[in-house]
Image (cartoon, rainbow, N blue to C red):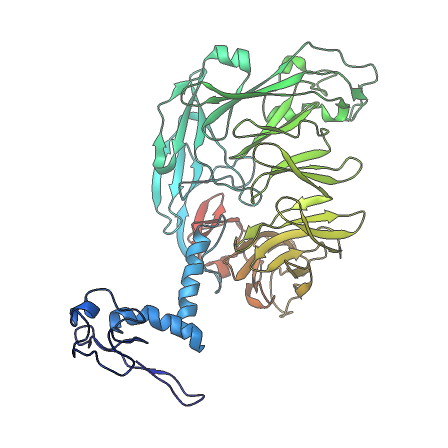
Length: 571
């Protein structure tokens, strides 16, 4: 039981062993049939004797205080009495566990990072320097003819899948810019002169190879890896039209004039396992500048060599695609749009070359245009427009998901920075201090942003009021290597309390890191950049001595560095 102490003294609790517990020792209980300090009339602990309290339901008002039951009760009392050390620990543990479920969340960033494990091997390059996927809680990438999956906690290989000749698996993305999570990977590979496809799902479960019929290629276009276990195909349709007489290209490759008439693009998604059509959409042609119709797009997908005009400088049929787990961006001569993984067409009315469609981590999509006036349209998952915001919209690179989703909008002509709800509803509007704003993190009640001048600021999410600033100045002028005064923040992560910034600059290869308290802006720890100007060697020292030369990614609360010659865990 608790003894009420003198003012300022500590509370004292008497705890009894489980086996020695007296049935009448209750926390705030009144024995049945009596009042405080009185025994029941029949002299028993209760109507059913001691067993009614010790083994059955406790009477109203309390329960027996035993060692087994003391922990949760004392934790509650600790909050009330201001002695919440144990509770703080429990809250930290709960926060860490919750951050494991947040996309890109890290369990703990309270101390400097060191290497915890290393995997040595080649990480094949994709469109980016480190294109990877997160599949079923594993980090997955291509490595010398195999798909390799690593356990983010230990670095052990969870599984591998041997691939055929000339493999191409997707969607894989750079963790710097996109969300790498995907429900499946589609791999195209060569079998002689033909192409076959396999689908790899969590745990390395792999479908039987399926040959792609040549007739389908002739009818629907060349295959491309697609989202959600699909193969994409695309083909220009409609009558061919001659180029206008005003279209000209000089010897340097600069083209002028307008291409007024062109052909639409039909994009088709087929089930990679069965070949059945999932969906098909038509992206309409819009008149466009000739400079946007060069053969630049041909490297990505779908060019036709016999359709190149004017000394090979124009390719009116060319187009390319960028495939994410839930969005396909198609761009080419006179065509630009995005299609969701379920086949919803977005942005087909936006002008090619002056617009872009992207996904929002908070759900839905956005379409930004910057032709005459910069504006952003918000779409829901079904493609319906839900709002419009003046300026271009940025969502946080990292979040603890503790509060409502926040979108920041930059209106350069008006020199304003505004915050909005996920549906576009305005929350606040303040003066824009400088250009080049980045929304680094949303943590608790703070929005962490950085300016083009290199200053990091913490803003109140509810009002936009500045809570703190950090200018990145070097506290040690004799430190070697890069720091943050002239650096660019390449990536940001959070554990729900601390924001980790990975920055590069000053011409050094290795990047610097700083961990800031999200609520106060105080530096929790930092490591200057610089270090050896070499690629990552997973077996050479910890992150402090080696520096970070690759890209960081967080999976299931574990932070990892991915480089071209290996992967290592940091913790």
